[in-house]
Image (cartoon, rainbow, N blue to C red):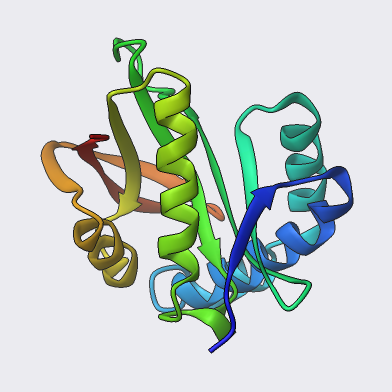
Length: 172
């Protein structure tokens, strides 16, 4: 088994991140979002978003690398939720290439994000996850997150309304 290394993303990584984001979102949201919406997910738009995120460190972006190939990424920073404490961080996005699901990529990325948030002085972390995305819910719950059902809200993903819930855990 090869080892997964996690490092800060560089501008050169934006395209690979966008490709993983698109492929993983299409796989993860299959059955939750209509196929025509999934097909419209754009690598180019995501590449522009992640390039800007990397350039301005908002959110902080790290990539998982295996055999010199990017196989996943995580974006994390302070919580975007209104009225959250300054010590609350948030996982803005965490994705592994579908070919690398259930192979430790997500865990390596979570460990890196947790360390980064602790270095920033955060004591808690949250993540917003679609209620019907059982794979993502299971991943976060195995990482110690608990659902906050009173936070359920409707978000628009690819033009489709999806119910999301916030998950939370302490960082220590």
